[in-house]
Each structure stands twice: as C-alpha cells, then as structure tokens.
Length: 112
Length: 111
Image (cartoon, rainbow over all chains, first blue to last red; front, side, top):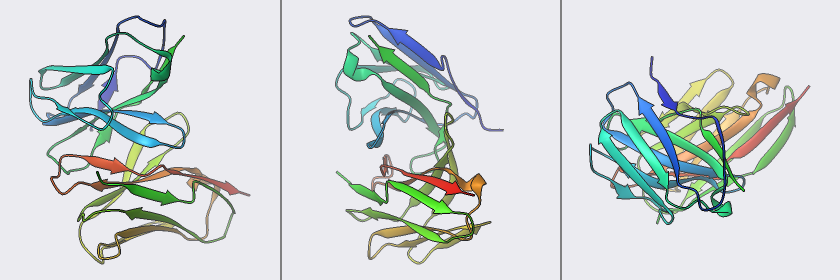
C-alpha cells in the first residue's frame, strides 16, 4: 500500500526559528513535492524534486528551501519562520512526472 | 503560468439532489485529476482524465474532460451525506512536471 508520512501533524514555532518538515515515502517514487494549503487558495507548490539532490522551485519558493539526500526523503526548511508561513503543509510523491501524486497527512504549522 | 478556476467554492445540497462542480483552466493540458479531501485528512485521488472526451465514473460521481473548452466537470448524482468533503481538480502542466490545483469546492450534503 502506498504510503507518504510526515514527521509531525501539528507544530508550533516562534518567529525567527528554523523549522524542518520531513517527508518520507516508501514507494520508490522519483518525484516528491511540497505544497502549502491555505483556505480559498487551494494548494500551491513550494518546491519539487525529480531526483536525489535535484530540486526545482515551484510557484512560491520564497522563504523556503529543500533537501533531498535520499530518494525516499524530502525535507522542507523554513530558514527563519514568519507568521505568514502559518499554514498546512502537504508532501506528495509520484512515480513519474504527470502521474498521480500521493499525499501525506499534512503538517499544520503555526508560527507565533 | 497555468491558472485553474474551480466553482463553486462552497456547495450545500440536500440528499438525493444532483449537482455539478466545474473546473476551468487557462492553457492546454491533456491530463487532469480530481481529488477528495475529508476534514483533517489528506488528499485522495478520485479520477484521472487523460484525453478529450474522457469520462470516468465511480458510484455517484462522474468526471469528464473537454480539452478544447479547457473544462472538466465533476457531476454528483443523488447526493448522500458520505460525499461531504472538499473536492479539488488538478491540471498537469504541458511539461508534465507540475500540478496546478483549483481552489477546491467544499461540499456539504444535508440530510
């Protein structure tokens, strides 16, 4: 069964803190994605990766960075968290580009 | 950038009624997904539509794709409470690397 897991369901951080969100998939998928979900805005792509150590900017990469050192793991980093980064963060993976994306349960991040 | 408009944003309907959710997109694409999200949960894929005129059906849900009109519809037949959820369409860019999601339609089915 396909599985994407995220390190935390809920996270509360202070402004200026460095935040790491981890995502792991067990399907040997090539592609991994980070989205944020905000009411009325749908899902917006932050970064994606189509191979180990490769990354591409999505639509809203500012304030974020990513790391993919192993095929199964894709990390999202907020270098200095700000209140406007309070959101739901969803990780996804897909076997190949354009194929179905499988989503993790999400991390609800609150920055105070 | 590919733009995806989904409407309505909110839909409250009585059990047993029919309704349609619309997904319009701005540039050429030949692949579109519909996802469902239950409150507090993640997204699950419902359908993938791969060509013009494609139609997929599962239970009370039927999705279709018109690539010439750049329009997909998700039709709900004889709604039941279990269909209450948020539904998203996602259009795949021509490069195939990126999904563009609609804003979602929050559906509430009232007994």
